[in-house]
Length: 426
Image 1 (tube, one colour):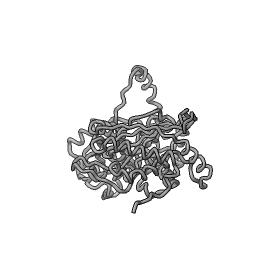
Image 2 (cartoon, one colour):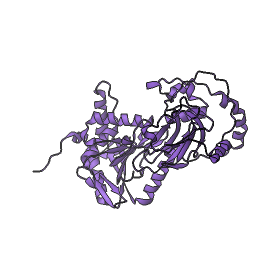
Image 3 (cartoon, one colour):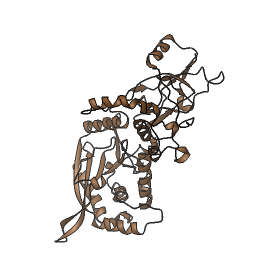
Image 4 (tube, helix red, strand yellow):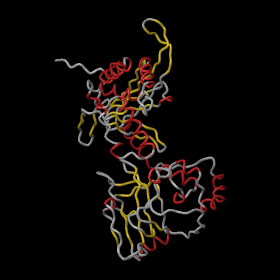
């Protein structure tokens, strides 16, 4: 027997380990080169790892939720059945993989203990070979529905399997046959269920806990009259370019924020805790908190100060779509210098957003509603929206935080001024 030991690859600068999110193979399975074998999560991004060679799986390391160090054995293949005497060299991603010519007795014993007899059901639909293209969310849906993705024909680009493709797919025979055993167990544990915190949800939990534990948050909420902004937004939407999506408040807020930060550069800062250094940025890279099926992600609108209204709106939509479909790359999910978060119609009256460390400020948009207020000395119905902000009180004084939000309020209440060039005193 000839073994091929695939070690956890280095998935990015500074990565020391990765968490197992989901295995797509098990001991005893035959896999093809480039076939997806495991999804892992680093502190930077989720990564789908393909098989470096063709062969039969002897053993795997870790279960969902476990962390495996970079360079540690991840999966062992038997490649003795592969065509030809030579084994294909691993790709650049799999640098550090160590092939071993013979199987150690301990390894053989371990593989025998985890490999269980598997009854093979007759194939009900043709299977394709090679790697299946699907997002982690759709892979999870397929697992829960008992669908073998090898039998699903994808309608997306390059044959990628979309959510709609799963609707007409039938559960695999193995899962269907096992379902009678699952019913009594589900009935016995219907009152409670245990959900292991893994993957992106674990990463979110760790980062939020760390931010709340180490950052002294200063919260500031201000009421903003967005009646004129709403009027401008509706007017611009009625005359928007062909193919452009409707504008929300978000691109206006991002543009206004880039103007405000010119006067409050201490809020466009990253704190390097390891070195005890504040890194002040001239460029404004705005993180947009985005809800996805897998949890909250923060894609980044880079150099927002160089974009116009339509470019900002288009970039926000593009990034949000890539985040929701798990297509956003590491460079699109890191590097923000300040974050904007919005709950849209669910925004409520006020919120206390948690700072996206290592940033020092976050701005939250709450729901805009019609309310009777005193306007120019008389009661009038105006559209009111609250801005809920949090600042790192170690580096942003309360006065500066309040002044910054007041400046943002002034621009949003007189939205034409967002687009007027700043006058520089001689």
